[in-house]
Image 1 (cartoon, rainbow, N blue to C red):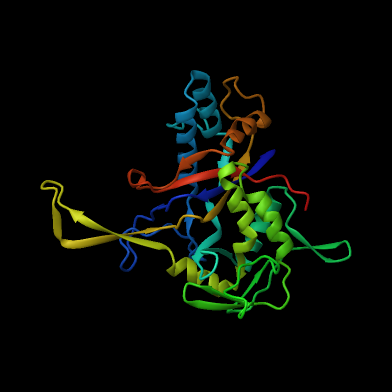
Image 2 (cartoon, one colour):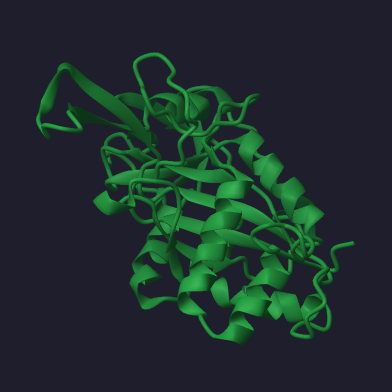
Length: 315
């Protein structure tokens, strides 16, 4: 049904708000989150709409408009569905303030396992590491609570006197004695980052900052370490601050890394611009290395992302 498949990586360059539309507790405008895990996401319809808007702005010829309709479907839906199925953007690495190295990219075994499953769904090899000689196994990290797994030779520690301790926010984490994460984190540094020159230092520093935490520790950070920004309530007529106080909006912090699955089929709309799914994929590939906007609050600079198609892997 979908002969072509891609994984689209989003590097969040400015705080991102994809709103859930309902207040939770003291936050008036919370982020979209998965029901089961409470992980922040950007829902698939938001991804599809943002990518369609990107193409409409940068490809404006009549032929381009026909291609956009074939790939995304027509706005009224009367002429048929689009050739591309878009998945929600899932969180892969979440930035957390660190005493050393400014911040860390954190993930956890459950997120890694789901990422591996998504790679398999796309027909791409899973991330593997060498266990002995030339024997490789799928990366399946196991991390104890209050500990972390990282690239043993590169991760930034607190100090030489405490070489195995990392401080994330106010919480200390001890490095596990043995780690199988280093080899896979090196691969991810190559796969996840675009070739744009401004990303060279981020790619180099990734293995110094990337850590795998226990599931409980990770989900604590994604629940309580997002950005919450207060806004004054303004009277629509007077343009003055209302007496009812402030309202709060939640943002996914910059430097977050998300990914979305794209399943590409043959065009349902027959308009002679695409012969098959390969032609559609070539059109979608124009997203690679480009910037666009996700979510709301764009007039205040929110939601700028860099897009990157996951590189082909050799295991």
